[in-house]
Length: 309
Image (cartoon, rainbow, N blue to C red; front, top):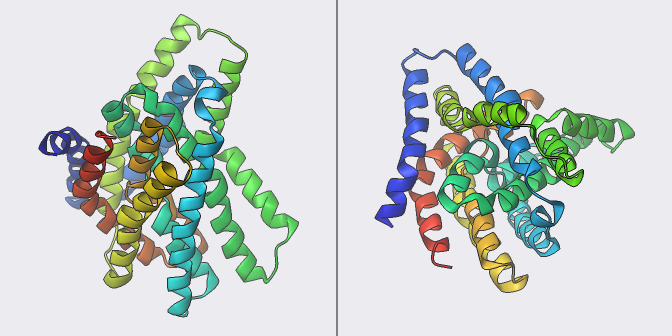
């Protein structure tokens, strides 16, 4: 356990460095926004393209894996929704809370950390989790918030969702990479070196950006944020473990990667969506802050456990 904790510590130390830089004012909110944009559109996209271009669809897609992750995630999502409804929260707020309960920071934290800690074989499972989070649940929150405001589902909502997916560089880079792989084309030397150099900036850049962005987050509505953090860090990986290992019998290594991905803290894009739609941004902010702080311990525990599967 101590050995795993020491391996994960440098990743969280980079987050802490970013947090300290943002909190002290050395790294302004504007600087953080531009660093995040660089990582999101360039460095992380280059990393995802290089990873996916060296994979085949059969290495990435597995029906049992998909069914295990989606079924477990939907259970936790519905539980968070029920808890929100019992508290008489409107549909839009329930959607944000449910998103906090199941959507982890797979893009900025999971891909850089889990691939280094669990090996390159983790690339396919992690990218599949990321794709499901973005396509299924990223679309669902937009549909629920927009539909609850309009009082109905309209074709315009589907256009908004589709456009959002097509504009997401992580989705695009994965699709382009897998398409490149399907054509069985080798990546030219200079191009491979280019995406390798650019992609290598994703790990430190993403982790630093996570920390710097946390510096501007506020911890309000602590009781709700603690519940959502508990759902994300404990209930979600536990549900995924039961689903993957007992119900769908997913390959133990792939199941371990899936469980590790499910144990990650609340993703920053939940706050971005909440702020964009003006729905409970402080609640999402507090959930990100608390879950990230607690994940220093919980993620280490989960990785130590799955290493023995």
